[in-house]
Each structure stands twice: as structure tokens, then as C-alpha cells.
Image 1 (tube, rainbow, N blue to C red):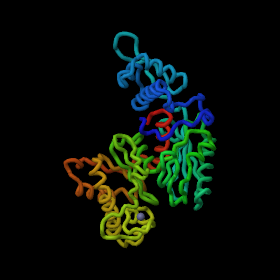
Image 2 (spheres, helix red, strand yellow):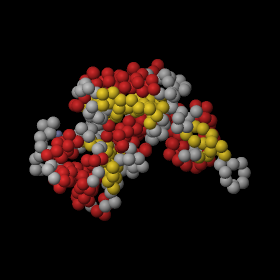
Image 3 (cartoon, helix red, strand yellow):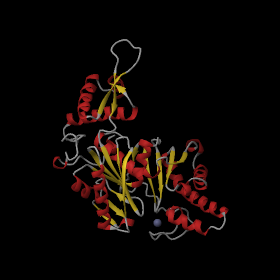
Image 4 (cartoon, rainbow, N blue to C red):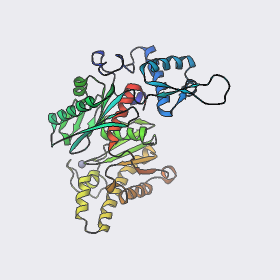
Length: 393
Ligand SMILES: [Zn+2]
């Protein structure tokens, strides 16, 4: 799970606040034996996170670690309260029955924040399983720049106050292009250029912070909580259009952190409406919800409305076909307003994809709506915290 980690633990001076113990939950990787121990610890936690109750022997078989190592690590995790003993397995095998272990899903809480909506910043306190414990939101009131950042800080503060257990960390899903240090390089709708959101929040709350692109967060949420395949793409349709990619279960960020930014890719050679970016015929001009709503408002009959939705779906299919073909993706998940996306639009996407890719390799491609609803971004941001702090996802 190394590949999901985007940041080191904060320095010792910033740790401890809200933590059960004063040391990092995951080593930062300077000392080799410590690094190995942290890696093994993550293997044990991941075995329990992914598979329910298991005995020490089950974990040893699954991870390839020795029984002695497992017993040692489990003893440490029991003391920290991250793992619980759940009684003995009832089976007919001779000898001493095995004690079952379970990851304690309520050992910590996580703050998850979604900045992707045009009018409202939303957030939640989540448990380690990504379940929402409590919610908060703050209207954006058209604020941009430093005023928008102040809204994020206030929203996080209200959720830190609402948390009822030690907070493992803060995960933020932001629109725009976000680098691995949690700097929002560009988010035009929020007026952010090189906004150091990670540092602002880490300094204010002295907790581990992860900031990632909202569509990448959505892809991680689908992988951890939505049962998604390991080679998949989430297309997030809202005020803009973005996508998050997972390859082999790892998120793809890209050389300039803009992987999945398909909204301003021009689709086709037949022109199209002018886009906010100055080009004509960007995917967003067909698919972004304000554009779709406007086109549907002009459609006189139900046939006209279906034609609008199908045209948007075809353009999305045209944009996705080379990506699906090049990467051999097995699943595309749509996230956004169900009334717009589910139905003629999704049908046109899959028809277009099938018509434009090689059936023998891509014929089993599935396309579906997300089942995670409007919590997808905040839950994905929480996955980044889980991954960074505990090595599980
Ligand atoms: Zn554009």
C-alpha cells in the first residue's frame, strides 16, 4: 500500500494532538528495521481490514510472516486498541481453539472533506470503515481565494470539534489539480493558484492532512467501499467533468498531477460550443451539469431530451474509448446527478465504447453508476488518510 501514501507523518512537534499514542502510526522510513516493522504491521492491519475476523495463524498464512512476528505485532496492536480479540473460533479441529481478531473500526475517527460542489463545502466525521458518524457543511457564498480557504478551515474545525474519538487525520478532496504535497496548483472555480491547503490545515490542527483531487478521491472510495475493479475509472460529472484512474489498485496521478483531467479534452473534429477555457468542443461543453441542464431546458419534446442526453453520452464514449483501449480498463463508474447520467446517457456511453474498442479484449467492460452517492469524495479522502496512517485501504 506504499503507493497510496502521498505524505510523510508530520514532525514530532505536530504529532500527538488527538492521538492515542505520541508516536507516528506508520514509520516515515528512515531506519530500515523500523521500516520493515511498519510494513509488516500494515500487512497485518490490511489482512484484518479486508477480510473480517481472522486468527493469528490465518494472518500468518495470508501474509507470509512468521507466527512469532504476527504475535509480536498483534500484541502491540491490542495495546493500542487498533485490534480486538473477539473470542475463540468454534470448530471441530483438535487442539486449542484459535482466538479470532478483528480490526477495531471505531479506534479512531477521520475527517473527510468534499470541496467539489459549486455552492457548498461538505464534510463528515467517519469511522475507520468509512461510515459517516456526523456531518457538517458550509455555504460557499461565492467566496474564492483566501476567503474560500477560510471556509475550509472553519468546516474542518467544526468537524474536529464534533469528533468523539481521537482523530487519525484530515482528508480533503478538492477540485482542480493537486500535487503530492497537497498544494492545489489550480482550481479556477475557487480562485486558487498554488494554494497550500495541506500546510494551512496541518499547521492549524496539528493532525496528518491529505489533499487530493476530488475525482481521484472518488476512485479510491469506489475501490475501498464500492467493490470496484482494480483497473477502473470514475468519471465525475458536476460543475465540471473529471476522472480518477486506478491501475492495479493504485491511483494514477500523472507526471504533472493532472491524470484524469478529461473535461477540457476536445471531443471530435466538428467544433462545438465555446468552453470557459477558450477552446471549442471540450467534453465539458456537452457533459457538465450546467451545460446539460441548459440544453435540456431548450428541448421541446421528450425525444429531444433523450437526444441531448444521448449526444452527451456519445461524446463521453468517444473521449473514453482510447483510454479504455490503451489501459484495458474493466470498469467505468459514473458519479453525478442520477437523473441526468443514468438512462439514455449511460446507454449511449457503453454503446459508443463497444463500437470503438476491440470486443475480444474490452467486450466485458462494465459501466455503472456509483453506489456511494454524494458521500463519494469525502469517503475517498478518508481512504487516503487510512492508507497514509495505517497502510490499509
Ligand atoms: Zn475547455
